[in-house]
Image (tube, rainbow, N blue to C red; front, top):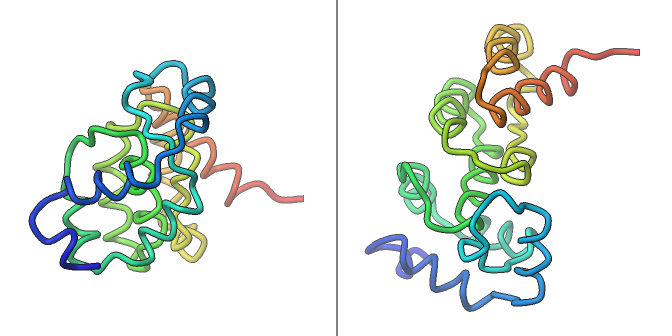
Length: 153
């Protein structure tokens, strides 16, 4: 798959459009009405996960380095990649950089870094700061992290 993504991210967009489902795009647009429906291609999350699984490390890094993505699915992919990063500091840095770019609940809720479960003592300060943010999706993410890792019986 590396050859497909070597030049730029538009090859990824081509893959996404090849997987597009217009009815699913219309359904997704109703679920996230606060974003432009033209930015939704209509690719289901399992297909996005398969694309991520087939990406090389270089391809993933290239996508993560993009500050803005044109399509909703690219943002979901960004969340999926971040969620799979195994190095805590690298993941935290990536999350911090991406949170301001999140513009809907679906992308926010897809971002669930697994590495956070092993670093709850270090994570608490960031989670509290996120939950106090005036940015709605940063706050939502922070509350989700607090509920996931700090609620008990």
